[in-house]
Image 1 (tube, helix red, strand yellow):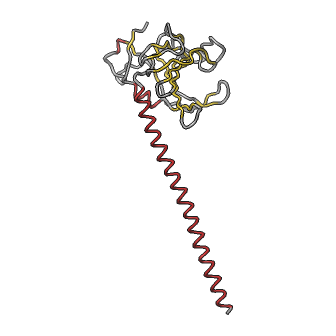
Image 2 (tube, helix red, strand yellow):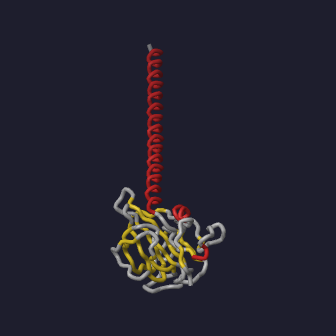
Image 3 (cartoon, rainbow, N blue to C red):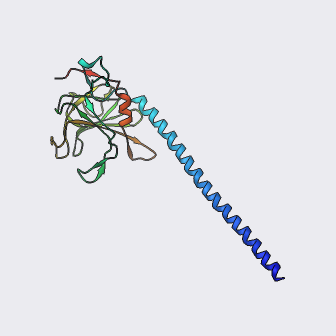
Amino acid sequence: MKRRQNSSITAKRKVFRIRLIALLLLVVWNSLLANRLRTVRQITTKKVLDKQILSELQYFPLAFQNEHRETTWKAGAVICNYEDSWQSARTFGGARKHEGTDLMTIRNERGIYPIVSMTDGTLEQMGWLKLGGWRIGIRSASGTYYYYAHLESYAPDLEDGMAVHAGQLLGFAGDSGYGTEGTTGQFAVHLHVGIYIHHNTDKEEAINPYPYLKQLEQHRIYADYP
């Protein structure tokens, strides 16, 4: 009798273990499936976002010199250098991450390099920012916000709320910012480009402009430089 009871208890324990293992496997499987679905959604969202932004972008934001009209970027018609500095550390104004791409002009002279709108849109928030200096924003039809910072000066007759077309002159590259209104000379002349989207929240989210700028290198506006 006692032997039968022990056998029964052993059998019940085996069944319990099997059920516990099955439950744990189910939990792990559901977790893996959820992660997989999340990854697929993220990839799909990224593809949709890329398609939307690339459909809006038309021109590289710094105009090239007319004398280089027949040359390609790789052949030496370079007006700026830039790298992927997305989320690199910044310290002015407190510890923070870089939310854009800096186009460092070949000549470190403010007021030389024309800045043009990369897209059609509506002009927003033109004026001074402590970090961005003289800045300007363009809101596209999709709601994406294209941000241009550290300008030396603005093109004439621009004002908030006006329609802007792709390739339109916005101003000239400078070194404004990192201080009270009018501060210059805290860094080399360059154009900071930022792209901000609404992504499942009411708050704007910065995305990396670098890959989009690389796509625009051969889509240029030309101008005469001093």
